[in-house]
Length: 143
Image (tube, rainbow, N blue to C red):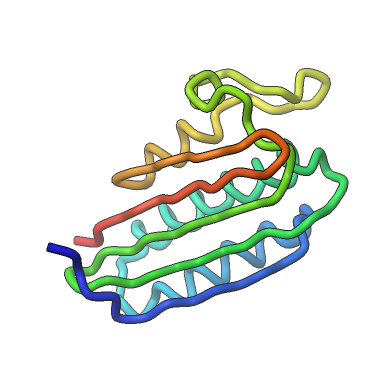
């Protein structure tokens, strides 16, 4: 049985590093209506930060583009956060999800973005098409 959506939010922002903190704050503020505890808010902010940073650094290679963020709040205190880009796409999602894998070999990236998202969310799904972009969907059930 599908859960009933209580509220939805959609945001489109430029994919620039300065907006990473904005995205964290927007998502955290929107989810506050479910009265999460401090730890849950911190988890959500960290997961969003990683997904947005991945889009800025890897999808658009810091060249700009757009980020699309959809957040849905469900009955039963469940949150679904979707972060989508129209960047270069990921040729091998399974490889990209492995800890320590990064395409930014000249930078200071650790290759832990997806692992961090998985740590702070109950479920993370990634779909991507080369040349079309990537969609990261994270779900978290609040206590």
